[in-house]
Length: 180
Ligand code: S3P
Image 1: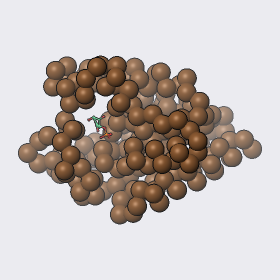
Image 2: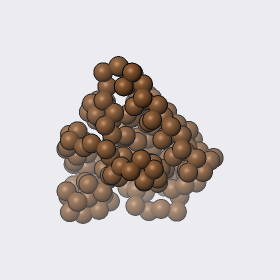
Image 3: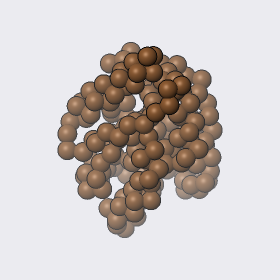
Image 4: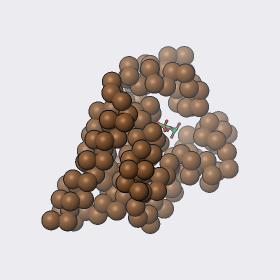
């Protein structure tokens, strides 16, 4: 990690269902930071839910909106940012986040992810005949990019409260180290 980095904010990246929003909300409360979800920003910008952006405008349009939202985040100071699963898998987005935030990737196996998301229907990329196979495929495609995060935290098979505690510790540690 470069000594000149600024950790004004904390960004959580990682695959769908790894707990970014739940953990992000918990950590924001603990730190007294604002909480922000990039998917919510995108929905506000587009004026419709993510699923409709995908069906009406296509995935490329959604990825454009992600890039626009990421650029805007650099103005934040004291925020925990939960990102959509594909956002942090893009090298340019990740580089942008690293200009102002410590980037922590939450990690889980395809099986754990599937267990967490299988009853949900709002994720367009998983509306396929074999969602577990799709999760495996997408995770394999994105793994190398996710590993470019500053810190990897395993979020499977443990309470998200415990994951939040670890994320919080990593953030405090990075802020302290950056000040020395
Ligand atoms: C996506 C993940 C979703 C959402 C969109 C695309 C992805 O966010 O941004 O459906 O490409 O992995 P969550 O990770 O919050 O489910």
